[in-house]
Length: 411
Image 1 (cartoon, rainbow, N blue to C red):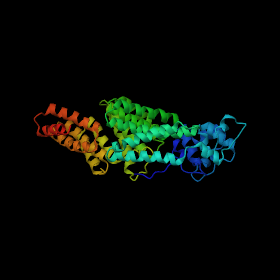
Image 2 (image 1 turned 90 degrees about the vertical axis):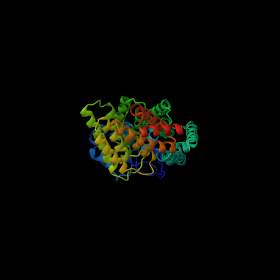
Image 3 (image 1 turned 30 degrees about the horizontal axis):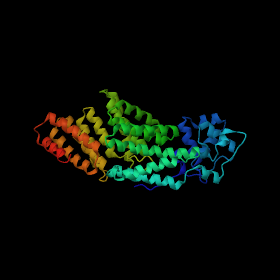
Image 4 (image 1 turned 180 degrees about the vertical axis):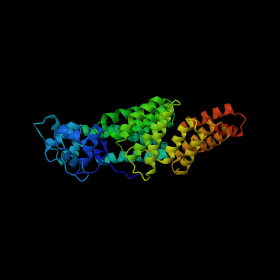
């Protein structure tokens, strides 16, 4: 599990520490400039400052805020930067004739206690660890109690910054809840949680929250077989993913490849576009040793090649799909139980598409053992569905019969 570290400004974006208790000024300006789609030259022209001065402000070596408060006010207004990130009080932007810098005590009062946020961060980290390696149901009661406490604390927020901090954390809990509900086959509830996360992320204008919220909702749409909606969410996420850290960026490109495959409709150009997205995700995954981010996504070659194989199977390129699955298995980490299940299911789907129902059922039987060990209802439902198709096509197959008995035995 990753080391828990929380900076109060992470509600707005990933910035390095800067002067005093503020984020790095260069990171903040560069982040919001790119979010608004401006070049350094365009921002300089808008503010009537020199391009050289803008570049100096954005330089990694620059730790100091502009000394003149009116300049900070102009930056905040031009780029819609939350005032607190520039060491300003909200009143500064309301009345230009009254400039009030925010002192250290006021700044502490503006934000939620960092220890409280670190507690919620720790609960999220623990639950995501269970999600990937075993079953998040192990911490379900604690997770629900933690979220209830978070919502209670959020009601006590008295400043916009505090409300934003709580909503940022609530957005991330909703993302986790959406996947937990999906695994329990509560698909409508999963979609509601995912949509709540998207709404909060868009309000906060947090790049990584937006990208991860769209990503998680796209995953739910894929489960509902609403592939066009999943594709639309993936496309909405891409511009924000390009401004995010590598793990999240890679995962969004992976989702773009998967959803594109399902809407390609036999069009060669769209199929190649799908594989192109997977190429980007694979390139990021190959970097290795990716530093975790607040989205808790895992981009790795195993998951990239599992979904690439799924696309290739859809395209009827079975040999290429088997090659992709071989790469996925070679890179499989033993502790990632969920990836092992996904790999077995995708191998089964590929064999089924080729008409090899015996091997398909052998893969499904292996997957069933792992699925029941971690109690993933949605995965077992998929096995049951594929078993039904195999039984229709090869009712007398020994492997089909064996799988049927296994499904009945512990159902």
